[in-house]
Image 1 (tube, rainbow, N blue to C red):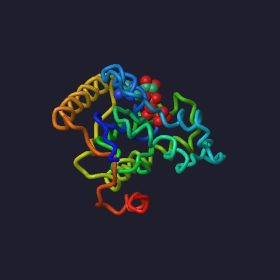
Image 2: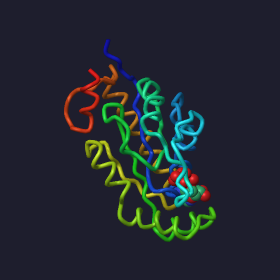
Image 3: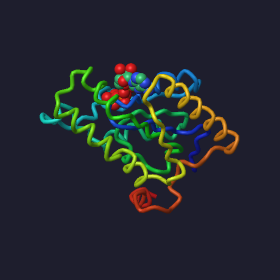
Image 4: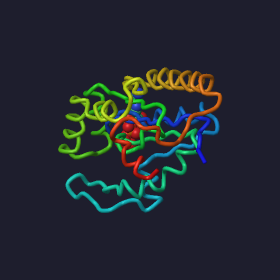
Length: 197
Ligand SMILES: Nc1ncnc2c1ncn2[C@@H]1O[C@H](COP(=O)(O)OP(=O)(O)OP(=O)(O)O)[C@@H](O)[C@H]1O
């Protein structure tokens, strides 16, 4: 029995500190009835850690367990996913990937204010300069569903959320019968789904 979702799944991603959670705070107020998944919290709450990286001072997520837990929820649609990692989700379940970008000096200030040690700040600044998160998104999803938005000021958050809510309204108009959650063939990274057919 084919499963469909009648509301889109939106990933809000970007280098740590670029404004994912701040943007999602406002976004979930605007998108009534959407479920919000901060993956760092979700992984903790659902015991999806497989270790701890002393160097990075962060937990290592068991991505298989994370996806096993999250997939049934994404299949319901109407989800906002907040994570700096974006290339682990099945393409067939994702409708929009918002990559937030941030000016480096602002990102430095934000990460420094958090008390990050210099090596962690430098690692994240390098990733932002290199556009690592954006590249992961472009490598993992159809380019037309990947949107890059600047997130330097509070005004940016407001305008970014307005753009995402406008996109969501258009998506609902264009997909009155929803979209399938099932693998439809296509890019290789979903091949493993084909094996599950
Ligand atoms: N567009 C923005 N304008 C001004 N300040 C911002 C903006 N976005 C985020 N900030 C500030 O930067 C800090 C980090 O923001 P936030 O926690 O939303 O980032 P994040 O991407 O969710 O980080 P992480 O991935 O580590 O959770 C917060 O103090 C927040 O107030």
